[in-house]
Image 1 (cartoon, helix red, strand yellow):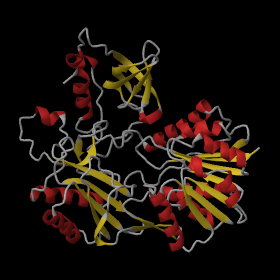
Image 2 (cartoon, helix red, strand yellow):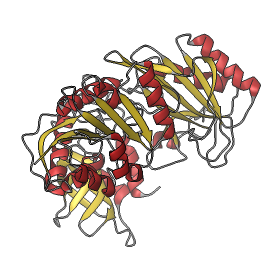
Image 3 (cartoon, rainbow, N blue to C red):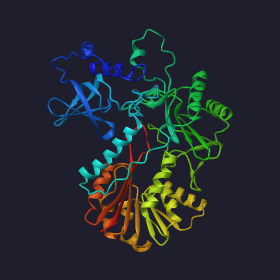
Image 4 (cartoon, rainbow, N blue to C red):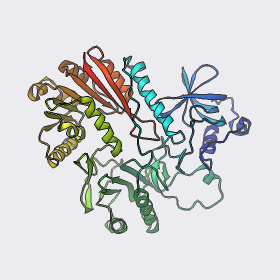
Length: 501
């Protein structure tokens, strides 16, 4: 094991997951570098900021930036670099001389190894500060945009247990900690049901308690694992493509519905029914119990048949009296409470009076379109995924909404002059594109249409800044508000209102 990984595992596996202030000399045994090792150690470095992708930022003695993934702004640390570029390093803190006052004690026993909640060691109010700072920096520095006073970021009422969907993977060779590797003790059960180790597609960390999804999520996952081990059901081996149990998905909703779907690598009717019957009997609150037989190399289910074993093949989500039918393949915002807040801000920014024709680009399953429909004359939704449009139409019918229409097609192709001529000139455009942002042809068409208002909802303020920069000669940014959908992570949504100059 090389120097970096030895030190990283020692630091990350501290009993309380809180780094202790350490004497740098105690690390020299592990970090003495051979002539061939180009890695460097910088001592007594202050971590000064948080940057993109959850990294924190320090400055090396030579003036270059150091990006770190295991420190908090305000820490004073020794850094071991593992990557050097022309203008920056990437590294890990290997000793802590001073701990930041922005720190807090992580609640999860898996913190530092799992990688799912990388900011758990930073107090939530400071998380919000750095998220808003990133949004503003991206819009001003990348987009060179003039901003009004930015409305303070909307934090999440629930800092934990806020997700409505979790996916776990099975493995017959779980990830071992350094402590386990060095121990003479029997390592016991080698099976895992949990999350991928960051950057390792075939390594699964066994999860005992996850703080992202409310009960009975943990109870269901742990019961499935215990039952499978007890009955010798084979866990999947990704490298060898062998085994029986592949993935477990749990979806919960604000209506109290619970969906559980198990993905099997091969059909084994007796063992499949054994496990599914156990789940149905042990957790009668499950309203949708489904499964997939997936024999292909990857575990995506979008090209697979999902079979309903018991209950319904869907669950319902409720938002302001609207009901949204969600199946195993449906996209729905994974933080239901904050999605409601996000959509309210979007509707408020649109400022609808009942007379407007609204285009909802990248409409997905039409949640925003239906949410604003009662305040609009008509809403036209466009989306590239056919299944999503089918769901949007079904949900609109379910909700008795008649002033919406949904169309499927690649946005840059379908959103053309013929489409506008057919469906009308929009007064307001709402756009909520994927992380890559909008295609330049879509931006050009928006400028060509020149609606009075554009509400741009984004999960990536860097690509949002790029797109807004293309529109700044024709539109003025009048409102900006970040929204935190994912506490304990660096991810942040942002809503911008543009008004025609």
